[in-house]
Length: 580
Image (tube, rainbow, N blue to C red):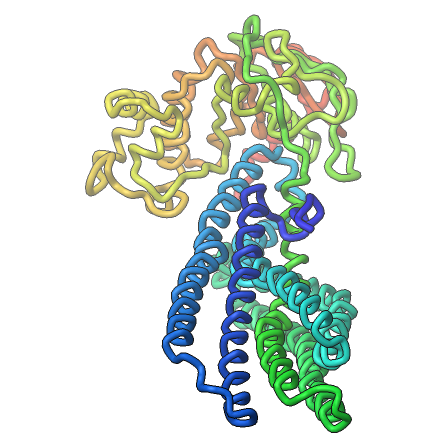
């Protein structure tokens, strides 16, 4: 019952399965003890009936009071255990699931995130896990415990009187059969509702991220109408899904409740024919109240469980995704980066084809070429942010696909044009380069990156919060913090994505000075968009259509009459003379 298939169906951890077993066990115990309370009531009524009909002496009140008190004490203790085993342990489970999910996401290659919509991932991490949390705490142990306790009670009542038992319990399997028959429909509606919820999240995220462009182009009304349409569509899909599920749940409840009528009719017929007395009918009516009570809630819960399986499947897709793994040791002989016939594709779109070149330690190797030629892809493959589909990439003779990415990246510093900063202080944003660095080391790296100039003007200096993604700083200031972070790390390999392309002349000069200090003596791989910035590079690799079209020193490539690098340099030189 609680095997691997069950574990995957509800996206449980191993501890979660054990928790479910405990919750099921204590639910069974509670249901049976409550049924025992009905037995005490039956014994009391039976003795009073004997007194009324046969003149038997009244039952000993002290005995029944003792039984009731024992029942109450036992009921309280078992209910507390059931609560702990169902609700209490779930908070530990949800913590483990969220941490496990974060660990899984941390180990996934960057290519996985390129194939997934950010709003969709956010909906899985937040919405799907929240839905499963309710299923784990309110549904699984309670429902499976009700199954088992009802089966035990059914065996007992069938032994007692199979005719009355059949009249009493026939509605339970029919009701659940109806619900299980609607499972495919419930799952389909859940998938549609989930897709609509993702569209709403996507619309909100898109609006917030592009608010400046939306206002600048006077598109507020259009975007708000589109967002309202998505919200209305989500609301309608939710209503349709809940309505269709509600019809089946209520129909199942009505069918199960018909068991009360059939129990009374069957009991009355058997009493009139002299086959049973009144007390057995009374006993079965009490059985009905305890058999149906757990299932009243279970009918609604099982519908929720059907819908939760869509959330569980989405969660398991993340756990099933292939992670980037490798050894925990990385001992290269130097830090030359060698591409050997590397091929790579995004989905079905081939980006790199047989790319081979070497970026030597102590030299600056620039990757240039038209947009879409594969420059950024090469840089990401060099750091194993993605894995190559074909060929090998070696650093110091070591195949990087055999090294754990987190171990490999200790030897890399990255400075990209699109800087990512956190809503924290200047000090802590720089310290990300090397956790555990002292304040003095952070300030030294910041000074080398020319950060002192603007940090001194901030209200609290290095202790000043800079806002979400450095919103309180200019582009040049954000870029210098990124370079300070890389200087603090002091890794032997530097990946540089034209860090000065979007800066004004003054900031560009300051950033270039900081970069000169960062790049000294390192293996440097530069993604270049402006040809004049790589005139001093030791080597240029020109990419075109995913292949190495040219390779050599800047002067050698400029000397080629029909070369791509020469043509790109001439075109950019002509564009610099353009005026309004």
